[in-house]
Length: 231
Length: 316
Image (tube, rainbow over the protein chains, first blue to last red):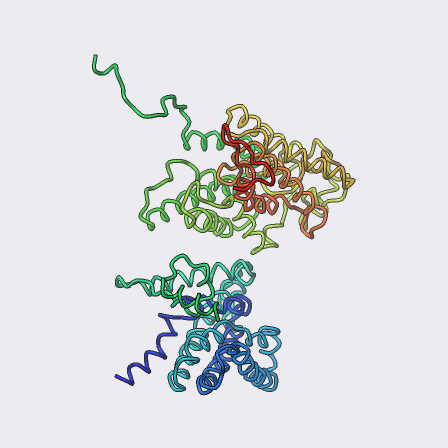
């Protein structure tokens, strides 16, 4: 039973709670760096590494971090790991560093990493947090890779730099094409999740950035919100 | 006796107008332009028009079928979209590119947003812009028309839309009868004006949008020190002002809304023509104003009969 629970922490991030396609987090790097498949993998792996490490540390420190300053504390931890990853990428894969540009340091404020710290690592023990980070990272990388392959194939006729199609539809590597492919993939993920009559799983209210203005917000969630504001 | 007394709810007086009839009128209005295209650019433009219309109708049929909705090919709106798209393409464009444009227009812009009356921008225009961005070299490859002046023939294979050509290459008469380079439907200004007059007489379109659009564009070109008449007759301005900007779904309902919308179109067209790195700005400006239409509508909601405006400091 215990093992199955742990496995679930890992697998939920891949399709059912895919950070990009179901929780719609981390949209900025998703749209910006998926102009080619290799960029997408670079971004995915870098973010996964940061996510796993920061989840582990935040979960280990969750009892020491005071509730009121948790966000600055989380960001400090995440920024530390991003700096490490960035130095490693600069040293060992300078080409990827050049093509990712500003989006590599911007992992610090990636919603997925902060979101997992807030929603999961801050409340759960270390091992499930690592698995959660790993699963979310794999889901993020997979979504980015899908988008990267589709956009590179249609937009420049290549996949990982190898020529496949004899023509190119330039719009797919431009921002509008990115939004279009993103929308199509969200549609596909929703389709996969609602197959067999299952209801779409909604994000829990705490940790949802839109909770304050949400019309579907449950009563309980509202009370918690009010209590937090009183503090 | 019983049959003489009808009890029914309003409306009691109906006009014979249907979507099909309106679309048919638009097709009739586009006929002179299509014929002119075939005369000016030859047989290939007829093929291009046929390919676009057939693809659009087929895609409309298939996508309605897949979405399990009632088929709407009978209202001829897909024919109009295909025709307009074809008229916006250069004559030697690859038919596969044209078909990709039809896919964007019908499936992505029209049917994914709910079909006729639900599209947020003009489908043919959106498709043209997607093609322009995706295949810039194929979409800006203008062939010189039959009988064009010698001066234009030299750089005909590079870019010879009148907007990019040197001043004095074309006379007003050349532009009016289409002896110049450009998309197959935009070169012959006379045919477009003829179609526009037919639509106004049939009361399919209100003259407000085309007239205000063209007037704004003329005023702006005068302000920029350009030749207003040359600017009006060249490029896609007439085609855009008469057939694209007046699309019911994507233009405002009220008269003041139409004026604001048309002024915006004219303003952006001339700004883009003068300051952007593309020779033409009509499609982008109409698309931009299409997106602004919901805001214009909100701004120009007519006052309800008997409604008194509240004084300034008064509370609700």
